[in-house]
Image (cartoon, rainbow, N blue to C red; front, side, top):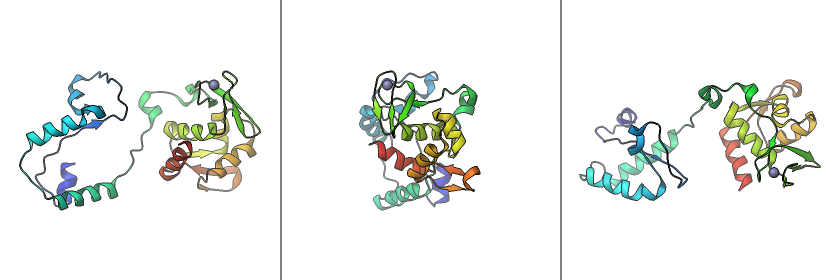
Length: 195
Ligand SMILES: [Zn+2]
């Protein structure tokens, strides 16, 4: 961060790292040395106050601060992170099937464009969208019809094609060997559909 700031012409700005968790849950740490760098939203105002006391002299103007903020946002890139590699999990170990949004059980069945949970009876039109988001987080942005069929435990190639095209996934290649992409933009659109 310090070198990024220097590359933008802002030298000598003190940098402190902080992770703010969206949930208010209690945090448990294996590495206790990291506790000071992590806060829940409740503690954010007091943490900022203590930083203001620690760094009381003004180093940059409000306008410079806004410039840095704009540059940070425009140059931000999402972290591409392979969860399976990180956790040492083989793809074959992932349990397959559409997940019920209510009881979280896997294996919803599709019945006339509606997904039905055999465990709790929940009916959902969005189970495939949840599955696309989960797939993206597990395997990355690239997906084929065959891969999504396996992930959903669904046999019908045409139904899966309908799901992928209805969600406007960009693609390349001819139909049989087509790869679709759950880009960052598509990922945001999928999440918005669930709100
Ligand atoms: Zn259920």
